[in-house]
Amino acid sequence: QVRLVESGGGLVQAGGSLRLSCAASGLSFSQYGITWFRQAPGNEREFVGAISWSGGSTEYGDSVRGRFTVSRDNARNTVHLQMNSLKPDDTAVYYCAAVRSPILYTSPAQYDYWGQGTQVTVSS
Image 1 (cartoon, rainbow, N blue to C red):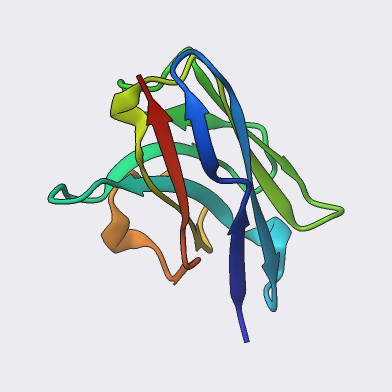
Image 2 (cartoon, rainbow, N blue to C red; image 1 turned 45 degrees about the horizontal axis):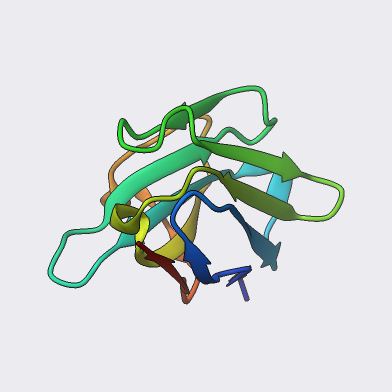
C-alpha cells in the first residue's frame, strides 16, 4: 500500500521559513517524480514545485520560484520543500503527490498518489 505522509507545517510570521517533508512508503521511490501542490480555501489546487525521480530536475510555480526549494533523499524515501521569505498568500494546505514518470507534470490530474496534506499558515 502506497503512503505519502507530509509533515512540518505550522504557523509562521511573514518573512519566516518552514521546511516540509514528504515521507513515502510502499513504492519504488526512486522511480517516482514527487510534486508539491497547495490549496487555499475556495481556490483550486496549485502547483508549487516538482522534483524528478533522480533529483536532477526541478520545476517551480511562478509564485514561489526563488523562494522555495524542492529536494529529495532517495535513501530515506523523503522529499523536502524548503520555504523561505514566506508571505500571507502562501497560506494553504500543502500536499505531496507521486507519479511514476520522468516528466515533471504541473497538473494534479497526472498524479497517482497523494498525501493527506499539512497546513501552513503565514501571519502578517
